[in-house]
Image 1: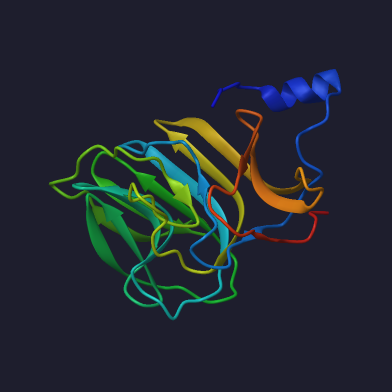
Image 2 (image 1 turned 180 degrees about the vertical axis):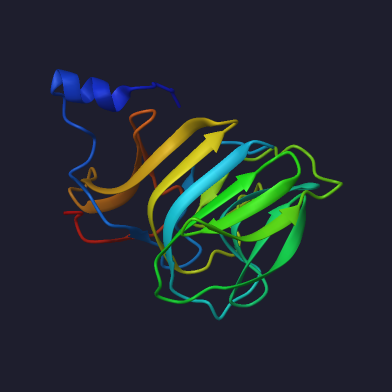
Length: 215
């Protein structure tokens, strides 16, 4: 996957068409089969900001964004226990903040040298100390699930809008949900990255539910 900073600005200057038909409000998963591989391997200095609407909060030990390998857990958007926002930074942490079905929030999760700091709509709601046995992740972060190295694990149902990822203060992914016509001339949902100018399609099976066009 090439990395081409400023590709969106290049398209706009040259008048070349962007690789999608319209920006949409959100993508929605239908279960475990749809996910997007961001290509970003998290470590200390990782941060993610996403506009999300959880649809099923009757579950626990489920992920919307994450990566895992032995001794290195990065669970930015994790529901544990049932119906509460938890976290993971080496270890995994039981949360206390209630997740509300059907309510759209902006969640911001920052992995500093010492803490995982979770904000909802700009306010800090939880802070977890980095686990002493935290290692360096060997796997890239998935949207709509958890990358455990073999498959997409235990996603919960949700809608996801604009999503940004940083490493050490540098914006590395600036995703917007979009729809485009695939080779079968069918509308398909994907995330367009405004940093690289690339379209990140469903890496699983089935299809995302596509939200309405963004006005």
